[in-house]
Image: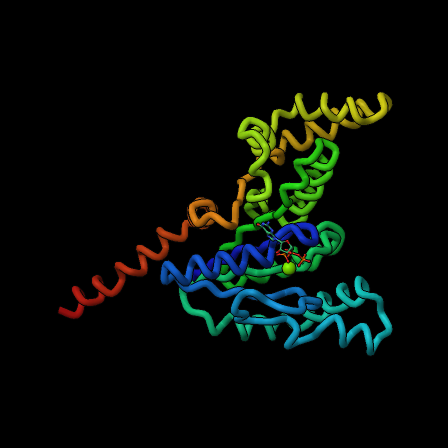
Length: 271
Ligand SMILES: Nc1nc2c(ncn2[C@@H]2O[C@H](COP(=O)(O)OP(=O)(O)OP(=O)(O)O)[C@@H](O)[C@H]2O)c(=O)[nH]1
Ligand SMILES: [Mg+2]
């Protein structure tokens, strides 16, 4: 029995929850079942139908009040609490059937993926529960404003990828906000030429950082971290292209086709 999961991560405000909502709408239109799981214990409202909500287990507000923790401490506590009570999540996910497609909407505090082992442990559990998992790391298009920002964003994406050790796609979200940029400029960032980025960076940083810039550049290049899939949430073709890429990576269609074939075989046997 196989299930499929996208984990949607990235900095605060990068468009993760909006993507989950739009992907759910798109899948509903195509009559494809998609469950969205909210794993943000500080979330306040949703634009999607929530199938599982971490706030039914624990929320930042409760923890903040009862333990006198600030918002980030409370968030870390909530994630730890969930990890210690993973049977709660397992029970909920057990209700889904073979080939169901699940999207995890995660909090925007990137230290949860880069400094703490929560996500890594959660993903290893998902694998044990027969999920094929794909990470989508969101950066929003304002990260293309300059190469310093872009570099910083790529480094956080790399850090998350190394921590999680699962198939990873970098997504450049909010592409509807880049309509006044030339296609050439956009293409330059979607599949960035590392030498060009480094020389751009060298113009804006003091000369003593040159070696560091070069080292970071070749690190990002080695991991293929400077290429992005553009996502314009206002365009269904853009959503379809991204979904197709993830489906191919997860071999979703193969699995669905195979399970469609099973009843025929059973019929043949019973004849
Ligand atoms: N123009 C535009 N705005 C967007 C897009 N996606 C999200 N937004 C806006 O950006 C803001 C943040 O979007 P969210 O989807 O809440 O971002 P998030 O990554 O879930 O944020 P956190 O949960 O705080 O980490 C909201 O005001 C959205 O309406 C997009 O594709 N285009
Ligand atoms: Mg969100």
